[in-house]
Image (cartoon, rainbow, N blue to C red; front, side, top):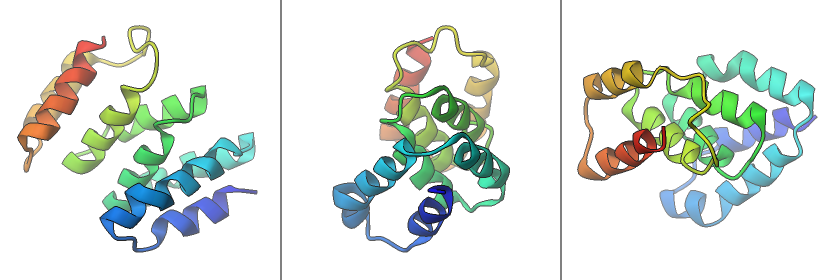
Length: 133
């Protein structure tokens, strides 16, 4: 089971550079080996993890082209945490087709507009995400 390894790994405290330079690749590689049971365990805990963990999860899923990763990223959009929303939107931009996604784009736009502590980079990422629908 890879989920337990992944869960412990992304809970570690990494510097921003360490995460983006090396650790995110390790996390992504682990997720690519997930079984159906691992995905189920992930979905059971994702709502109970803190924002930093969920941001790392979203970043780890960006290169995982699977329905399970797509579903998990869509779930991460249901948040009041700006960083989690932006990380999920950023990773979803990597998927080929969002047009068929069962997402309420207007609701997501309203949710993003209500979030606090956004910056211009966040706005650009999210605008590109919305443009793909």
